[in-house]
Structures are given as C-alpha cells and as structure tokens.
Amino acid sequence: MDTITQGLLGAAASQSLMKRRLPQGAGLVGAIGGMLPDLDIFIRSSSDPTVSWLFHRNFTHSLIFIPVGGLIAALPFLFFKRFRENKRDVILAAIIGYATHALLDAFTNYGTQLFWPFSNYRVAWDWIGIVDPIYSLILAAGVILTARNSRMRPARIALLLSSLYLCFGGWQHYRALETQRELISKRSQEVRHARVMPAPGWLLMWRSVYLAGGRLYADGIRVPWFSSPLVLEGGSARAITFESLPAKAQEDAENKRRFQILNWFADGLIAQVGDDPNALGDMRITAGVESLVPLWGLQFNPESGELQRWTPPPGSSPDFGALLRITLKGDPRFKPLK
Image 1 (tube, helix red, strand yellow):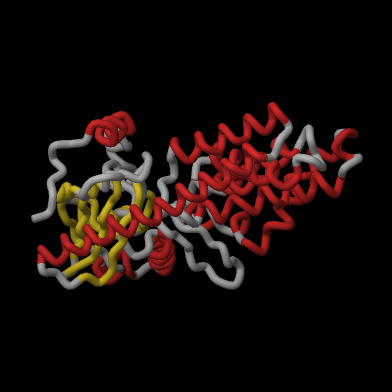
Image 2 (cartoon, rainbow, N blue to C red):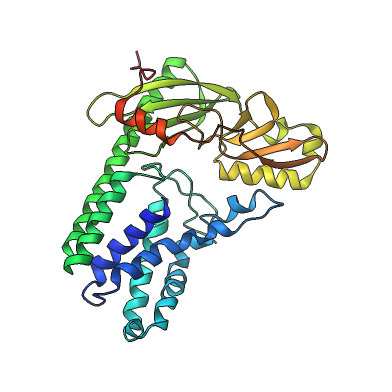
C-alpha cells in the first residue's frame, strides 16, 4: 500500500508489543521499519524500462530479508544515546515494523515477491486497494492515541479493526469475483485467465480483467456494502504474446527478455494499447476501472528494432477526483446484471 499507511501499520504493531519497553520511541522506530522496504523504488534505469518492474517489491519485500531490513532500519536510532541504551529493544521494534510491510503489500494487486530468492512468484491477493482511507484512518487513530496516553490498547484495537477490515475486503473480493463469473457466463466465453482487483477507495470499486478468445476484456464492478453489485461493461483489446510482435522485434534477444519481464510483472494481462499494434500495456492498473489505457508498458520502435518504455498519452493519468465522486455518489453507467 502507500508508504504512509505502511508506516502507520509498522508503528501500530511496534506500539502494541514494545510500548512498555520503549515508551518514547516504539511508534517512531516501528514506523521507519514499516516504510523502509519502499526505498527500492529508487532502483531505476534510464535505459532499461524493466529495472523498476524487477526490483520494486523484490528483495526488500522478501520474508527472509526481514531481520536484515529491521537491523538497517534500527541503525540510525543507535546513534542517539536514549536509543542506544535500549539497543535490543530498538532493533526488535524495527524488525516488527519491517515485518508488517510485505505482508500488507501482498493484499494488494501489484504483486510482492514474498519468497525471494527461492521463488520470483508475485503474491497478490487483491483484497484492498493501494490507497484506502478507511484502513489508514483506523491505524492513524490508534497510533496517535497510544502515543498520547502511553497505553497499548488503542494501537491493539486499531490492529484488530484494520485486520477485520482487510477480511471484509476478502468478502468484497469474493462478491466481485462472483459478479465477474456472471458477466462471463452472460457472454458465453471460455476464459483462460481472470482477475478482479480493487481500485483506490474503500472496497466499493473493482476492476474485472480476463483473457478469452485471444482478447483481453476489462469491465468495472461496483460492490456496495449493503446492496447488490453493479457492472459497467467496458471493452476489449487484442491480447499480446511475444509471437504476435513484429518479426523484427522477435529477432532481438533483449526484446524477448524485456517482454518476458513485462509478462511476468503483469501476470500475463498484456494487451494492445489503442490502435497502435506496436504498443503493449499492463492492463491490471489503468486510468479507470473499465479503461483500456494502462499506466505503463512497452512499445516497439521499428527504426531501432527495440522494445522501449511506452509513455501514456497526456490526460490519461488516473482521475482520482472522478473516482472519489463515483465512489461517494455512484455512477448511472453502472447497471445490475440481468
């Protein structure tokens, strides 16, 4: 999830276990531990578009890296006398905060390599959006109250309530999946691969994506907390495989490597972008829940013969204001399935 929420979760977890042993620093140490894994976003390359896909949520998010990451997070605090006198507790608090990060990320749809270096499988349970104000506010309230009154109970209650909210996300995900199955049945399609992923918000808006008949289909699903799901039927785009690229693109081994990385990163949900047969995008995360305009991808350059980074056109970035309005007020384009 977003880095601030990761810090709040790390702080709440550390406060819940270490507040008595580190009364003045448990929350701060846990927060730094909770945010530190996201430093991997700075691993980038101007010449290779796949580097950030390879290394974000890679080794820093691995379960086996938790003790090392926690120790790194604790090191800056050990330069201060009041923390150095409680060195073991500081390290333990940082490890607790660090341990929460990757597990929370696994509940989103981006994909987290929990089992690196033994497996490069990207764990993505699709239960909660990368940004969820309700989840964040629950944690913030617990962290602030615990910091003010020195009692662990508010942080523990916040952890309990936020965990229940995550479980509610699992239930909403199940309802969205059932709606997707009804939609596929209505269309009488044989599906090769399908996912339903949460949009930023509070578990109301979901994105349905699936592959069928050589095409990728994208639809929006609204799952109100207390009423029946609604669907905004979107469109489809040509699914892309390496063999469907121009022959010149297939001749280059580096192009094949880059395509394989994008395919792995996007969980196979790659499709042509718009009318450009040379542009291919990761269709998991797009400008809108029913959109076929991705936020990143690759594009074949016929002149150089290379697969290069695809840049979204102007105005195609997510409209969070519109998403907020739809989440709060609904959208007449969403209809019940009949």
